[in-house]
Length: 474
Image 1 (cartoon, rainbow, N blue to C red):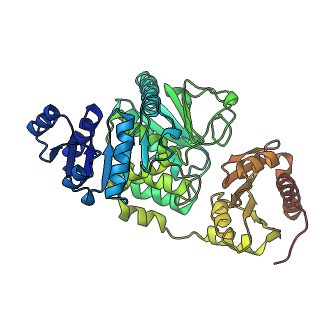
Image 2: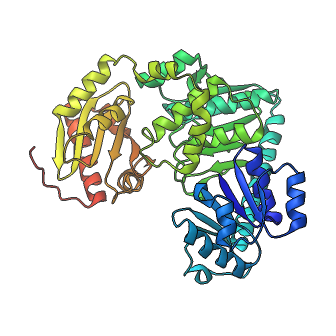
């Protein structure tokens, strides 16, 4: 039962909302006319009386109240009511309305659990309304771009797309299709991670390798997902200016150019952004999209332990009931490939430990997605807070790093260490880099190439984190 003391405009609105929710409420008001009106409106438990009277509060059965709401505009009356309530039932939580010009000092001596300041409420509502207006304006612009895409939209993801990139791209594709236009999801690199392949195969997601695209000019518009700058960790030509950019990675905004840009590094996943699009634009949240978006958020936040925000969790709350959890279980437990096992073995054998940092060169690789799997595994080692695993592909050195040291922003460290000689970036706890071998790719002595890579990667990374280059045998 909830007890409402004073049923003016605010009190009535609260009472009506609780009444609609089938809550048990008791109202106390001193006005005979208001009490009569409330009873005629269907409120059964309405008491005419003085809210500061212990007798009136006892009649209202305050001992059974889960909470008391004191909502009149008379501050002095409200403060007296708090004292009366606490005298009769010291344990009951009290929510009280302050005056227009009230400050925290005015209620410092009172025992109310919550004080509502009208000016704060107005300010919060104004800001919330502003966000809604800005979002509607943004969605209107996005729809306009989609409607102009007579030849369809090329949705280009980051290289070697992860579940978050795949989920975000698929959701944007469904939004574009709902607007009567076609779209293709295009990716560079490979879909190598076992779980990523399982996601694509089990959901039947059609992805087009960039090498199979004859000419991007066959599309009216280009969308870049989970990347922000053409040519950096994506297959686009650096000269191309995408029409749509959606990402959640940290980036220098001066370098980003596009007609529609939605980059939110404060979020844990781009899938959260696309979930908001679906819900706020009124598109259908199907089981397919709920499943893939939930998995996208889950993986990019490492099971909600890395960079997760309230917005991410709000999206999860919307997606979870609609997702296919049996399918998710199958995606999360794929068979391990032989190459993944080999790379993991090499990472363990070749590990070098410098204090709490572990670095490992796994040699020559075909699938770069084996590296983050090895890095995640090695981060479980006792005494290790940061792991960097690297291997040599056809013409580049691929680097993957994981971190649980709150003093280090791994994305910034990787940019500092390798940004001037390649592409690097990521989040505080997960990051990657890619360095072109250039002329060294033609070196015939592979052992020399491995030694060069080891020396360069190790020195640059340890210097970036300020670690001593003294190896500790463990």
